[in-house]
Image (cartoon, one colour):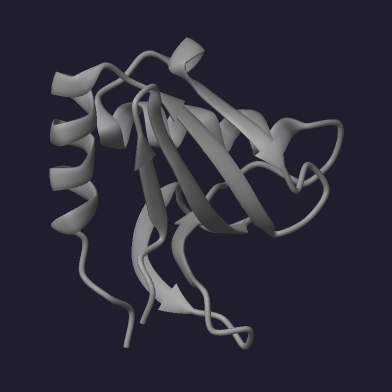
Amino acid sequence: MSQAWIEDETGLTLRIRLTPNASRDAVEGFAETADGLCHLGVRVRAVPEKGKANKALIAVLSQFLDLPKRDIDVIRGMTSRLKTVRVAADAGDRARVAGRLGGVEDER
């Protein structure tokens, strides 16, 4: 399984599979999609209309990664379940975020 995030000097780029209209907000774990790419599964209670699910995704990731919402942005997949999220972080935060993501178990 490939890694769901890529680090660079300004932060991380993270692949997400979002499940809107769920019973709870939660980070579920990593799973591989049919194309062979690994995505972090995230569930949100918000409905997928007028950007509500994307805003909820940013809030869930902000809490999970312990970063301000302003540092997290959906950069691809605004209307899709498969999204690419940019996390702006300095070197110390990048290491902490990567460690947090590395501690998430794979979905089986």
